[in-house]
Length: 118
Image 1 (tube, one colour):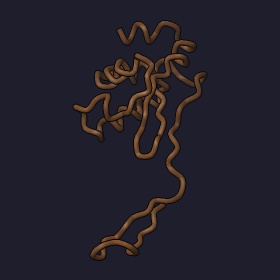
Image 2 (cartoon, rainbow, N blue to C red):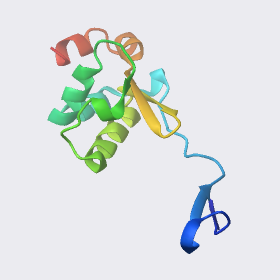
Image 3 (cartoon, helix red, strand yellow):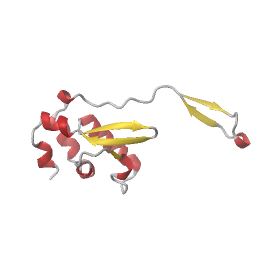
Image 4 (tube, rainbow, N blue to C red):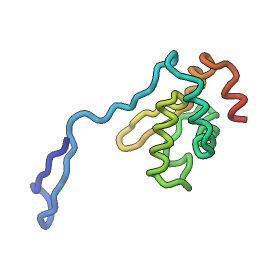
């Protein structure tokens, strides 16, 4: 939801103020992660490279992982990785931070990430 207001704007420009809830990012619970979904997500070269970039375990800003790929394409890839259970996304203001869900994936499918990310 947004509210338009001309108050305080120069030359009649409209200021848009966003209010209301921010979209919640869906992350499957560890026990809901399916092998077929993980393999399908990691089967794309861009998503596999992104997962490899996150393999160190550090939380990283989404814009620094694959700056050579358009943002609109990466939005799709991030959603695919998140909804399959491969990554976790965290909002901080206007930025999204990503981490690989290594502990969840290792508990669910022992050794899989080591093989796939090699």
